[in-house]
Length: 96
Image (tube, rainbow, N blue to C red):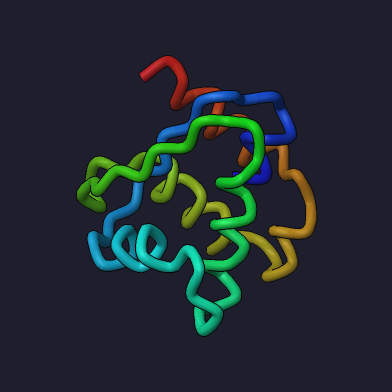
């Protein structure tokens, strides 16, 4: 989400392969006992853009698959940097 925000995306479809994760995010607003990850997602969703959560099978979620391949190859600190490979995967997905 941070990558999409940083390049100026105003409408985002967040594809998740877990219906439970979607429910957790949707029901979390106002709940003080939520995980740090969910609270970060909620904060990002409150920015000035449209974010839609969509349940998608793991096989059809090309972005997650592409990013997981990058993580397997790189240092665990990859997420601290706006990787050119991640931007490439996001950009490629725009045209598929």
